[in-house]
Amino acid sequence: MRKIGILALPGAQMLDISGPLDVFAEANIQIGYKAYALFVVGVSDRPIESSSGMRFLPDCTVDDAFDRFDTLLVAGAPGLKNTRYEAKIVDWIGRVAPNCRRYGSICTGALLLGASGLLDGRRVTTHWAVVDQLALACPAAEIEPDALHVRDGPLRTAAGVTAGLDLALSLVEEDCGLALAKDVASQLVMFFRRPGGQLQFSRRGEVRPAGRSVIQDIQRWLIAHPDEDARTATLANRSGLSARHFARIFSQELGMTPARWVEQIRIDLARGRLEAGDYPKQVAVAFGFKDIDTFRRAFQRQTGITPAVYRRRFGGMDEQTET
Image (tube, rainbow, N blue to C red; front, top):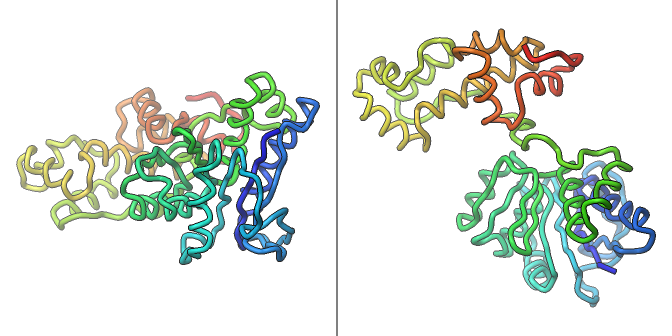
């Protein structure tokens, strides 16, 4: 029997806790015996109030003496990105997690793992909204911003909320095999392998120019005219710079090539049109892609799914063929 511990702080998101626990509990049902013993770990023995206001009691606390967990997961909490972490919690994670067979986080729980020094030199993911914050806090970590969940040695991290279920299902597959994991997914009516990555769900917000003024002028022009010729040579000519010099300062200022930025901005803008119900072929023309196939490939690079799937999933539209 494997002991699974989930550390739940005040303000934790309920689904970050209950979702993985239900996956493990369903595995127990499907396998016919108690393969997993499940524990919620609290900071104290007082009721934990979740982000939704629901209250529940922990099974044990960080002050209790207990046998080591097989797996320890740190649940996320919306407030974690704006708070100072208690040294007591950070120290506890740093002591307990390395003694587990595997350990990890769900959503913003990665910030606590990072504060404990357990992400250094590791591949990791977290919720798209705190990727930059985690990168600043843990420069030695290799962050995969689009992944739903990541495995690196004993470390397991999930992007957040429903991705915690994906992570738990992958742990069941590791422990109990493919067939049982598929039975669990079927019973819980969830994807066994969810298509795409988390960037399809991210809201990057208003497109804002960045960098020095000559670069910002070009960015503003393209945002206003996304269907115009945006090859690097053309943009350089509009800026009055040579193509080589323009590409160099653009990469220095924004950390990416002009071509990559153009594709990213066009896809960001295209997403809004698809969500409004426009067809992929219309959107491809409106944002300067030479044909639907080029648009489809670019969209898939940025989001992990096709424009038609994105339109169905986020546009509230009936299923349509990809035209």
